[in-house]
Image (cartoon, rainbow, N blue to C red; front, top):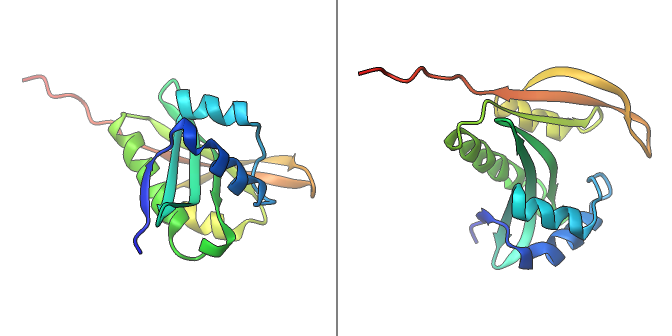
Length: 153
């Protein structure tokens, strides 16, 4: 069955929270924080047969998008869900004339590093001991979009 990607709605919040709580390495937020992102930010969900299998959320500030969380249910790992979500997020950012997409990821999360590199993200630096439980550095990534000058016909 194909996976469908769409913008999240407020009625998706219980499924988003349940999925996030089942992912130990994900950033854990409150329902209110997710509600604000659904209303004011960008939250894309991936569904298969009506079941939430993953999501990505981001904020847009002054033309830069920052990825806040990417979560895929364990039973859907290695099926291209995160790849599809990230591809859709990049397309939307380009369509909205974003200048860049920024994110950070645990140093030990090698599958995420490979995913971001595949999509053209480049390492920009690190935040020492940024993560807790366990303490770990965050690797900063950015995908910068080139600006084409408007023609002056």
